[in-house]
Every structure is written in structure tokens, then in C-alpha cells.
Image (tube, protein in one colour):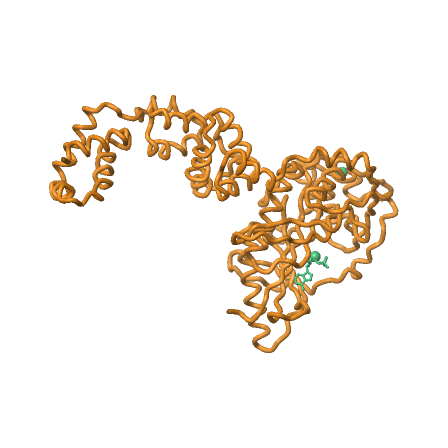
Length: 474
Ligand code: ADP
Ligand code: MG
Ligand code: ZN
């Protein structure tokens, strides 16, 4: 048992999927030719005036509502001053003293327990451009400059890497359900900085924190925090002090490395942006956004358990991803066997996602195909084994299962004479096991079923195989 307690607070940046940037009409499209989404405003030319994107305000407010925040009817944009080549204004437009949302919370489930994590604030801000270094040249791409972001800051309420990851996953699911971001972590649409400190168990004060950057996946968050906690323990056990600093995670080496001393708020000389009027949200707007919030993951999970009688674990898995939950409901509407549909999703479908790395939303799987698969297994057209075998065809190539199994000759054999013949062959090939079975080792039945199935390439009707074995092994 470690003598220390871990303390974690997370800062999460989320790209809002508005059509245009925060203060101009440039598009926000990702991956286009460098410097094609740029105008005088987002390039920081002198004399231009920014005009606030109202959809960004709406999206940011929706996030605040979904996280039970207090929404400030009036909030203020501030300039956060620092120099960096990818930031043409020489300041970032952010919110400081009066953010849009404050005092929220998010409940997470870890190890069967529910825990409430405080949300300190959510504010709107602009993203920076990108520096690209090639050989001895450096280039600048301003396509991403001034794309709208929200920053969601948590209280230092998490006590382990597992809790931090659970919080991030829950948060990710919510912002994707809200439809305010594409949530793509590889493209940087959902990014996280982790503040990590340790303190002796029972201590009242927090320890000094390090801020970890460059965490591009849930796995990296987990690894970086675990590494950092053990590094800080070593520092304290050597009688040294942890220093407040920003550290970069190296995902190849699995270590965090010092990047720079942590700057303090006063280093940024924040002040209200004189070019921008306060953001005002009317009570009517707030009411209508609140009323039009979609069903969120926690509610949907509850409903899937109540309405469809899904086991908690299945409901958890399926509702954690909006695309999965939508697929489930669409398939159940076509074939009302929720638990069976759920089994294909938590079984072969998850296996497919893990093996290929292709997320459901990027796959070819259709609800019609999923419903039809469950139906033709129930109807006896194919065995459960064949259903598992062909799942990757549904997932990767969008095939419809019934037409596919007929074309490929995978239809289940229910012809008793063919099954009897295969059973007789298997018994003849395994005389010792047949004797043992007759002598009372009835557990061998599964061995025989397996052999017959293998002989018939998984296509035999299992009920008929069992029946034939019972009869011919007498
Ligand atoms: P900054 O913006 O300078 O990084 P903030 O005061 O806004 O600083 O805090 C950022 C994050 O650090 C918050 O998520 C907060 O919960 C977390 N945090 C603050 N103190 C600690 C600490 N001692 N250990 C771990 N996390 C902390
Ligand atoms: Mg910070
Ligand atoms: Zn622009």
C-alpha cells in the first residue's frame, strides 16, 4: 500500500463543430490545404473587428446545461497575452474572470461506485494555428487559428488514473451526444491536460502539481498519470520537492519530461477584450436550449435497462457511444429482440472494433443487417457460429446477411440424414471417447458436438446434432 494519495484535476479542450470560426466566417474544415481557411480577421490584421459566432455560444451553453452548471447570462471575453508564432494576435481570446458556465458536476462510475466530480468552469476561447517544422524550415498553417473551443476545467476531485479516464470517457460521450463536437481525439477535437499531484494520506493540503500535456488518447492519459505518480513518489522519497511545471508525455517511451516552468495567471496579463462586447444570453434563449437538450448517456443507459431490460454492463457499453446506442435502437425497431441485438454488439461487434480499430461510425454496419442477422439465427437459417464468422463482412463491407449466407452456401444444415452420417463418422473415428461416454462420462457430449460441427463446417443445426448424438451413442 502506498503512503500517498493521488490528486488529479483535468482541463479538457473541445472543438465546437460550428461551420465557421469564432469571430469570422472562415470555415472550420479539417485537413484542407494549409492557409486556405484564413481571412484578415483570423490572421490578426490591424483594423479588423471580430463578430461573435452565436452558434458557438449556443453549443458552449449546451455543454454547461448538460453538466449542471450555472450559466452566466453575461460573460466576458478576455485577452490572454503571450507570444507564439501560430497565434497572430499575440494574445488568445479566452474568458477569465467571468466565464460562461460555472459550478457544474459530472457523475462517473468506477468499480461499481458512483462518484461526483466537480466542474469548476466552462469557457469559450480560440484555438491557435499550427507550426510545422521540416528540416531547417518552419511553416505556419493558420487554418485552425480562431476555431471555437470550449475549455472544461474540473475540480481536483479525481484520486486515480482510472477515475480520470472514467471522467474523460463520460465527458466525451456527453459532448458527442450533444452534437457540439465530432469528438475526434486523433485530430485534436477533444484534448486533455492532466494536473497531477500527490500528498501523504490524510494530509489536508494538496501537494504541488505537474501539468501533463500531449495526451492524445484515453490510454495515454492513463499511462502518463501512472508514470507521473510514481515519479513524484520517487522525488518525495529521495527527500526532494516536486516542482510546479508543465511536462510533456512521450508516448513511445511512456515517460513525462519537463517542458517549462508552470506560468501563473498574472504572467498572461489578462484583461477584458475592448473589441468585444459582453456575451449576453437571454432567459428565453436559455429556456429553449434547455428544453431542446437531447437525451444524455446516463438517461439513455437507465432507459435501456428499464425499457429493454438490458443488463447494466451491456447498457453501459452501448450507451457510452452515441453511434452504438443509435444503431441498437434502430435494429430493435426492426426486430424486437433487444438482448440478442445487444449480444451481437457487445460480442462480435466490439471484437471487430478492437481488432480493426475502425469505430462504428466509420464502419459499413447497417441496423437492417444487424436485425436480419439476429432474425435468421432465431429462424434457424444459420447457426450462431456462422453468425459470428460472417460478422466482419457485415461490419467492413456492409453485406446483408441472408443474401450473403445463401450465396456462400453457409445456410444451416437441418437435413437429418446428413447430420446422422456425420455423427456416425465422428463416433467411428473416436471409439475410445464413445466407450467412455457410454460408460458414464457424459461430459464428453460437448467434445462430440464440436467434432460434428467441425466436420460440417459449423453449418449443422445444433439441436439436431444433439438429438442425433443422443440417439447414436446409446
Ligand atoms: P491553470 O489554468 O493555471 O492550469 P487552474 O487553477 O485553472 O490553473 O487549475 C487547473 C487545473 O488544475 C484544475 O483542473 C484543477 O482542478 C487542477 N488542480 C489545481 N490544483 C491541483 C493539485 N494540487 N493537484 C492536482 N490538480 C490540481
Ligand atoms: Mg492549465
Ligand atoms: Zn477568418
